[in-house]
Amino acid sequence: MNSKKTATFLLATGQSLRTGGPNKLLLPFQNKSLVRRTAETILESKTGPLIVVLGHEARKVHEELQDLDVEFVLNTDYKKGILTSLQSGLRSFHGNVDGFMVVLGDQIFLRPQSLNILRRHFIAADPGPSLIAPLYNGERGHPFLISSHFIPEILEQTEQLEKGARFLFRRHPYHVHLVDMPPQFLNNDVGTPEDYELMRQG
Image 1: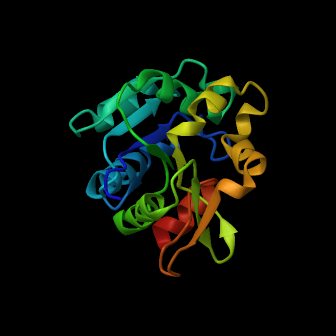
Image 2 (image 1 turned 90 degrees about the vertical axis):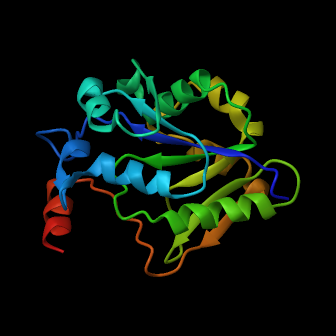
């Protein structure tokens, strides 16, 4: 059962269109940038190699993370939608894994335990393809874990790229496993300037 291997893609490509102004991934929070805090959390978990997909202000984000044990992939099509970032990561990754975690670059309240919980459910799932996603107070959120079985389908997708991998969950409901997360595990990301100010004050 423990033979299943995973990797993690950290999508750090966004243009911060909702926050406006500077790149939100580089904003400080408790002496670290949002993206670095998220990357360090992933590295503390047991989810395998970490691949950081760059896009908007790629050089600055690269400089922020270059001393960490991560691989970098550049997505030149990031403006077309978030799914292009996952597609770029998958095309560039040559490791042999059974599944992969997808994490957003501003999930600073993510905990290593939550990633490991999702991975344990993936390992324990019945043989065959699976889509593992967390439930926070009854709502599906990020990050999620996808069987490598679905890679060809992801790479072939050309529509609604801005909606990411949601199409897989709609298309394959019988492969979806939803995991109730403990109430102290937050699902917050930083979508607006107000979110950021609340986070700093909290």
